[in-house]
Image (cartoon, rainbow, N blue to C red):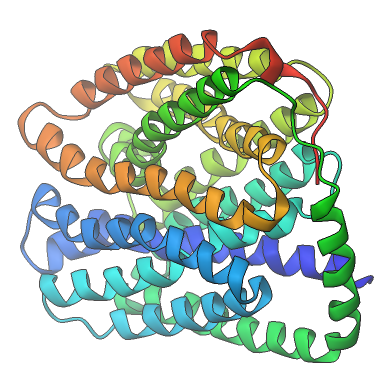
Length: 401
């Protein structure tokens, strides 16, 4: 296997573990801790907030360090750091302790998106499919968070749900360190080539007002999309626990249904990634936002197999939106400061994501999940309006390295 292909594999596996480990608590809280600690779901989930705050807050420093020091070095810190943090979180005995553990997980997890995505697009002309494939791995991590956690809860308890993924991530980190050490000379040559490519980057040539407008749409849709993504991925195990009835009666079955939905929804990123390299980005974005708007509304009151089917469709659109802004950012940023730009994008995404956790708790406590899906319907509609204002210059299919 060529060095670049192996590096891409490590980046994809890293994306998988990033989303897997950050979302373990959502399934643990819904399926085990609420019973074991005698706390309600709405009381428990705010303790996830520090982790998601860190997930956003540390994205820009991580991107800055990667651009100034080493992207490969920061990825190594990510693998080892988030893995050890997950193992340590398993020793928590109180909600405050688990909140601290989740904060440390979020701090190391923040490294991946600004660093890993910059490495994925580096040196590539067409970035839609590589970002889509990488996104699929992230989405499978989201799905496996529910599947693996549910299985481990039923077999050995909630603590093992943190220990085993954390230990696996550390092991992969050591494998990545070996990969870096054995390819040191070739990496040095690649970095020189990359530097030459950075100098010759050809970004979209647009006027300053148009560029500002593109950035405004990107960051607005990023913020609202963060709310949508976090609300759906975090709450879906609990939604299925309540609404699937006899279809899902154990933690394993709830996690299994969530995994199936997330896995099927990952196809959305492949479809979108393929289309982004071939047709208008604006058109693809409009369709994705419209699907979200319609199916969030249809989820209100849905139960049983209908809820399962509707959930699968709106998750298809939620996951499908993920690579769109990343592709657009790749077209309007230069390689030498791309990690920092991705960092700013993800600090917006995950800062809003963090605020969605107490929002979910508050809405669920007073009105239940139907009210949450009405909020998500309005959120998706605002994205649709914002995308309609995207300048035509942003719709071209060609990307830059």
